[in-house]
Image 1 (tube, rainbow, N blue to C red):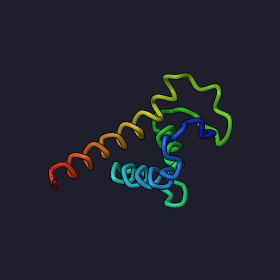
Image 2: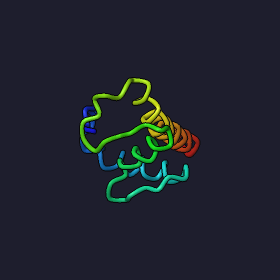
Image 3: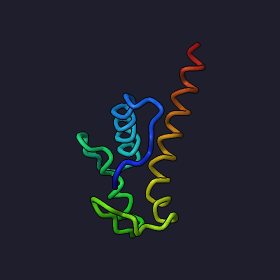
Image 4: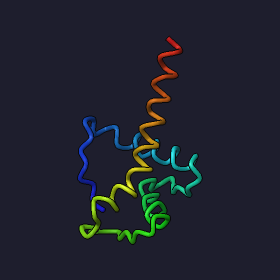
Length: 90
């Protein structure tokens, strides 16, 4: 899958990938430290969705959501938790 999403701060890509790796590893997924984005293939397999390395234009919105939802949702939960911890420290 190509990266079509735009990050407001492009320099944050590396840190977001690291966060994705930590979060998904904590959820029990095998994460390749050099390619944490590859965890989407494991999530897709669990959902019974065939995901190719390149063009996945055949995926329905529902299928894409079943793959990206658990990843992004868990990342957002972790970011909220981190923000709450920062607030309580102040």
